[in-house]
Image (tube, rainbow over all chains, first blue to last red; front, side):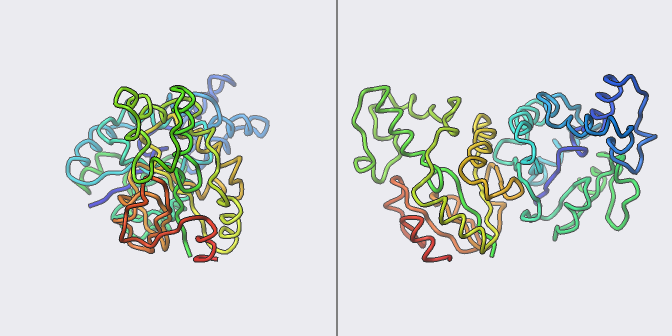
Amino acid sequence: MILFVDMDEVIADTYGAHIAIYNAEFSQQLNTQICLGSEVWQMVPEEHQESVRQHATRKGFFRDLKPIQDSQEVLKDLSEKHEVYIASAAMQFPNSLREKSNWLDEYFPFIPWKKRILCGDKHILSSDVLIDDRVYNLEHFSGRSILFTSPHNVNNNGYERANSWLEIADKLL
Amino acid sequence: MILFVDMDEVIADTYGAHIAIYNAEFSQQLNTQICLGSEVWQMVPEEHQESVRQHATRKGFFRDLKPIQDSQEVLKDLSEKHEVYIASAAMQFPNSLREKSNWLDEYFPFIPWKKRILCGDKHILSSDVLIDDRVYNLEHFSGRSILFTSPHNVNNNGYERANSWLEIADKLL
């Protein structure tokens, strides 16, 4: 079985990083619970929105992300049983490309460079399973689409959902 | 129609760059004609081979490549008629990722970030046409496979071949 796994908000905690940077720079107390159903930039005052939207263009933003809980252990087990590819729509942020490669080397060394895909639009990818947090990536996918829960997508319906990597393990191991 | 187009030795003159760097650093007179049927590193004395093999890890190597003759004009026309994606097996060289993105911005600005793919192994890609200089990329491709002539592949048979971008124009425009 061939599996494609997204990076941001599936194995890398981009959402948490947005909140942490915003809170630190503007002395705020934003948290995931308050943000449910929205993007982080939508939950800050209008005068701060552009700052949050620009986080992803900062040097080091993608390199410093924390892995999502249990993603390393479960993906290691999955990669021994299935063909696991990382597929990230990263081309919008050229600064992220090297950082994502280095980040994977550190946290997911068992997924070698041959099984990493940095692309623009995921619609050209086909495989058996796609695990992603964005409906617009899943909706054109012809295989089994699994929506990985992220604070921004809690209100999206119509897709098989996984709330954690332990649930992914139950489904696919 | 969806087209995937390789970068190195199809739209970017990697082969010529290897020869130019080698000649400059070792005061040699290597040229494409001498090298036909081989990789550049195979055509230099054994004590220089490792140096040539390391060119691709140098800062600036991929950013400084020249576009292959007529590739810009023909690909511009093709991109107006078909869905053209650039697909480069770049993950082996993390230093190349940002450079390839910047290089495309300069020479192929009409192919936007949404249509760029940097991957490890191309076997997971499927579309209608793949233009590539490497048989190992073409042999698992299910669509129309076009071998773009590069000095190293002149002896490969069994694939539809294009010797230039003008021939690609004849075939696909």
